[in-house]
Image (cartoon, rainbow, N blue to C red; front, top):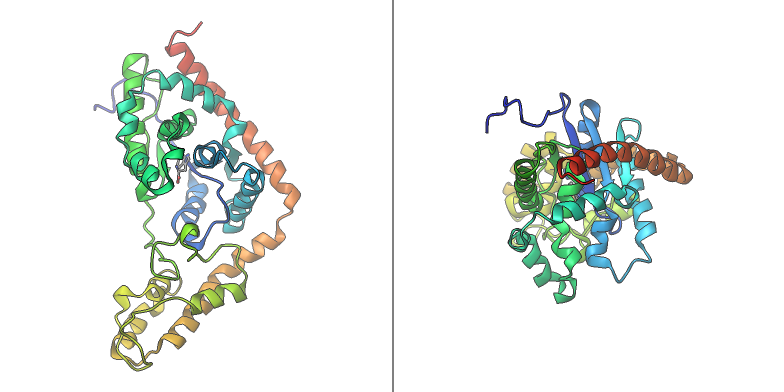
Length: 335
Ligand code: TRP
């Protein structure tokens, strides 16, 4: 594509970043190292929009909505604790921006069902969560995500690897729209976090569904206890047995919170000089040091302030969304 084409949609000079998370409960340190630290960085230089995707949560949790409100508050508290600054970013709830839902309906006219059915997460999630999640709304999950992004005219979308297929679909839909009507939508690009993944305490992917997570909201004692319970190289049974850091989740944690000591730990684990008990104690101490400012920020948050942040963010997000939706409707010749 010729990007200097005068018909191409104007790309904002500053990067316009948009990302979101579903409010499904407390976030863990994987979210903090992976996504949230990146969000904080982006907020320094770019124009940033962070969305609590409550409608996306409904696609799979439509039978359990009684926790939704609390979960929205909880996730915003985790974001603020992580250092996401509401002065430098627009933090809002998806359902407070009804233009997203309207765009979803309009774009649904041009999206072939086969495009949605072939998104890998569709079949994977049905296999994982059961056939009762295979609703019309769930099929539209990635389309709704495209709408979240497109309505804010975001060009850059920080996401996890599992979301890249949604962005690919998003670009296809945007191109189709721009070709059919007028070039009013921006094609979004994903950006992946450079942080190495931190596995859960049992060595599997850190996830609430495995109950192996260390939460952002955990206090110091809980965090230490969880680090102590982590599995290590199963071949390293006695203190002086040589270990293999490459397969040890505690070592992955050191990489993230204790980078300067990684070469020493690597060597002394392999020779057997370093025992797992000491190694874990150091990891817990470093992790707690890393979490100290996060905990301080959380303690300082006025819970009533969350409402105000979301109200203000919702207004700002709607102003952008209204503008995009107006262009979309005009391009589609809606009277
Ligand atoms: N689907 C994303 C996830 O599960 C959450 C999400 C919703 C999102 N809307 C978005 C991410 C828009 C990026 C942009 O992680």
